[in-house]
Image 1 (cartoon, rainbow over the protein chains, first blue to last red):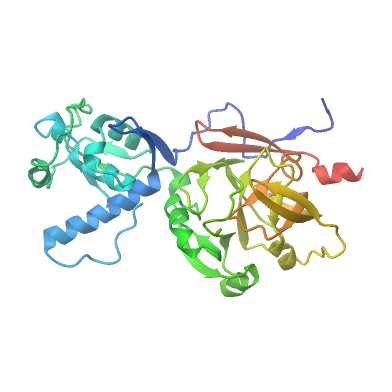
Image 2: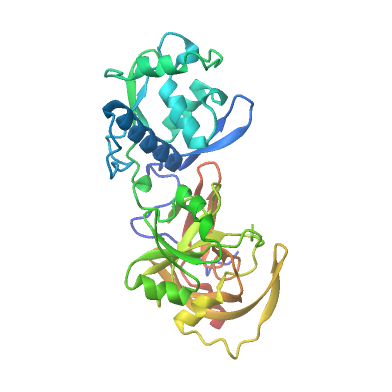
Length: 233
Length: 138
């Protein structure tokens, strides 16, 4: 044992088993109906929620979507949760829809209870109050198509509720490279990219040109590998 | 220092990724994969050019990652992890072509105690009091 090498713990950043609050996970595993386990990420849920809100507003108003959309971190992102919508197969239909959209699978591939539990683990808050404005329409739309097995319902006290983003500071815009952006960067294969707060700032064929384009802006920079490039992992 | 797992470009899988920076390029951070299987800490040699690190007289050392073969040149350069800046042994790799730096045994694991919690998806670092590069010089 080398006693010269003493661990240095930064002031204000205690480590170990103290009472420090655990940050929200950025992703959780979710088991589908076919037992396949997939990852549900917080970023994908927020992106899906934003898309659903835009579509819902378009449908309700009969007008084009309003741009820009509210930030997915905004509390205006409220998804209706309707676990007591008559029968188990229609439960939590909107939650299923948003999770399905986030995972890019069909809603009937997802079971309600694991979906709700996954959303809770991602620190989305399910508020057990309020009025579901669109549940009947959603039920009507899904009645002919769903044959979801009657999975157990979420807690009955949450007969009606809404889903809002949680308050984890780690998830509120501090990541330059969000999972969603990371996935979308594939189209820039072979280039250097600069990203910040989940947005692409600029791209260039060399690091030098990227720096020139960036100027004094702060950014995370990386090269996007070509598809056939061997990965280091 | 705690770092939630992150995705790298082209993937949705979350991995132990830590942002690093060079003091000479203060506005840029670089995602770096924590890799205890890597012997060295490696970045693209384009960073050496931007930092003004002269590698002309440094011998190129061959190595393999995955199925790829590369050449790197080694230099001791200040590296920043969050607020901790210290001299680290860095290998600047020609034609690296990956979307991340690699944080390996030399240059990273010899400077930090690393704890990877795959369940909580969190990487935790504690800095050694004496940077490894300074120890080597003693």
